[in-house]
Image 1 (cartoon, rainbow, N blue to C red):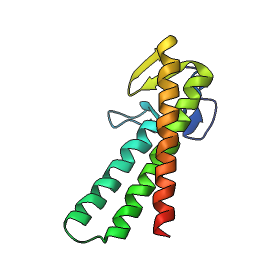
Image 2: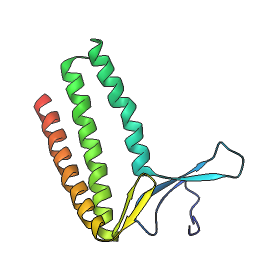
Image 3: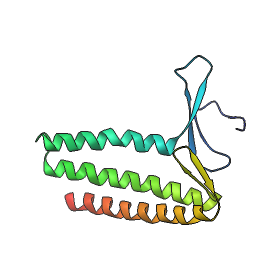
Length: 132
């Protein structure tokens, strides 16, 4: 890994053009983990959507608020997928979890991520517009 080169804990990767987080490790002082910001944001969104679903199921959340939660999550995940897909098209590198892929399959996967991301953005935006 090239030198981090910035005092901030967030940086764009020089190779795959995706945002990265530098996080201190719990295993010991001086150890650091490099995590993909795209993966972290997807994981952070899961409890938000899960909490909204549980609240809706327990009648603590109205139908309109639940629809807004789902539409917002679709919008958010769509933006992340478009960002990941366009980075894959730009660099010919696809990163899913801890696997890094290169080659012809990357282009197809990046196009699919971009298309599904755009469709999620459209569905999320339509959902929010219908609630307004």
